Length: 440
Ligand code: PMP
Image 1 (tube, rainbow, N blue to C red):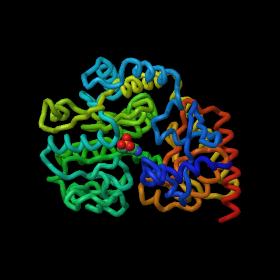
Image 2: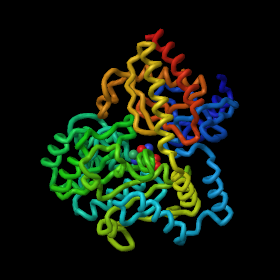
Image 3: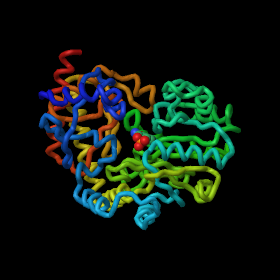
Image 4: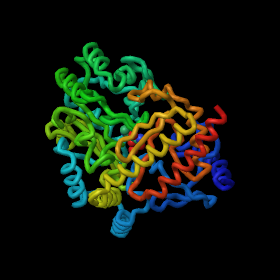
């Protein structure tokens, strides 16, 4: 598959845009470098690059595009919003309609706020938790990504209960020292961290189902134990549902019955951050939680958060249209069935060629890990064959199958994918595994 125009555009982009990309995950650095593919058009489950090559898309823009590209209902809503003016700087009725829809699907949210990105949403939940508890530290889990604000870009490493190693230059140690990182799915490590730093822990922040080192379910009892331990310590529980909200069913993961918990009420958070899917492909983030906690936020309370673009009519209109479309009966079951077929096909193809492959699938999302052990935490996700993944990624891309260029990212099946797309993908994977088996 020739891509001369992508390569030329990349060379040009490098001269003007740092690294040639506006988000580092779009570069091919994690899969050995080279020119990323420059896309020109997306329609349904497919997109076309600048050279006219067609791809089946499992990137789904890192999650938001659950309906597929250019879904007519969403497109119409965006066009209507554009015709009426995209930004007012005043409240609109649309925001109320959208807030009600989000709240109805997520009972732990008494009050919400809309912002422009997942990063902003998470960042603000931390501020609100600190304001409410009058404490400073947060506990997070290794490998969980919570956006690029200072506080959560710390110690994504996998050591047991580590404190304060920034993952990025430019983060002061004084900030890094406010973050404690423990392994996901490890209640004992969480309890030990709470014992050591308890008095100063404002919140325990977690992706209730992980989407950032593959798709990883909480072990039975993990979220329940986490909520109980945090609460008995006077700390809040923050769920980062930026990837997971509306991913597995119509609602957040905190109400998804795939999570094994004695009762849903035992795993409800105090604050939740959302984003991605709820914007229907336009920029958005949101956060919310229990009323008395959310009332810390300005103009009611002392915790400040604002945004020129927050709640803009275009993003909100796209979000409403997306949630309306997601209410189509059977949609999530269709995603589940398609993705089950994809997972089975990939597993059989890997077996046929003697490739060790662990597949974690949760409804319409899956992750592929080149290893022969289960992946339940970040250390296990790291301990996989990155070279095999990089080769697989390139062999798939050459056959018109677009995955995220990182061994940690999920594949997302959209409502626009068909059985034919899945069969084409499995056939491509078979050929890729055959090449990998020869080389390794
Ligand atoms: N939280 C999670 C769980 C995410 O996966 C992401 C983005 N991948 C973010 C927060 C940050 O969202 P955004 O990129 O919209 O700032």
